[in-house]
Length: 161
Image (cartoon, rainbow, N blue to C red; front, side):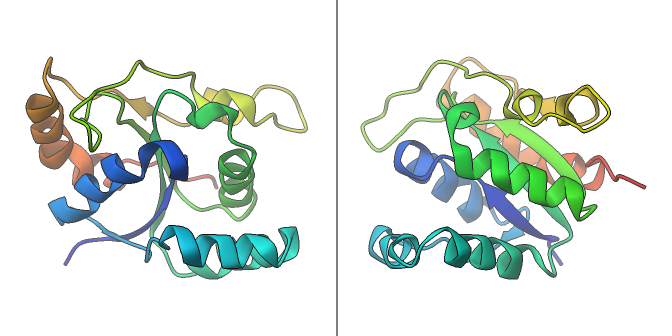
C-alpha cells in the first residue's frame, strides 16, 4: 500500500506537474482541489485555509513539498512547511521543474522553500530537510527518476523528534 502524504506546491504554476506525480501511484496524496473548489476555500479566509491544511495533513505519513521555479515564494507553501514542522510531520522536498507542463515546457529550478522557513533558535527548516533533485535531462527521464525514487524519498523524510 502506498504511503499517504500531503502534497504542498504552487497550485497555479505546477498543478499539471503535480497531477503527473499523483498518477504515478508511488504514494497516495490528499485530494487536490480543482480551481473552483480552491477558490471557494480561499474566499472563506485564512482561517478556513489553515483548517483545510490541518485537516488534510492530520493523518498523513509525511509532507512532500513539490518544488517548481516559484514554489519558495508562495506564502501558503511556507505556512504548510511551518505547520508540518511544528506538528512534527516528516518532511521532504522533490524538485519538479524538469517535468513538462500541459504545453510540454519544462521550467527553471527554483529556490529551496525550506530555507525560507526560519526557526526560533536560528537557522531554517532547510538545515534539516532534504530537497531531492531527480536525475535526467528530459521530462521523461525526470518522470522515471521521480517514479523510481519517490517512495524511498518519502520513507527517508526528515522526522523531527
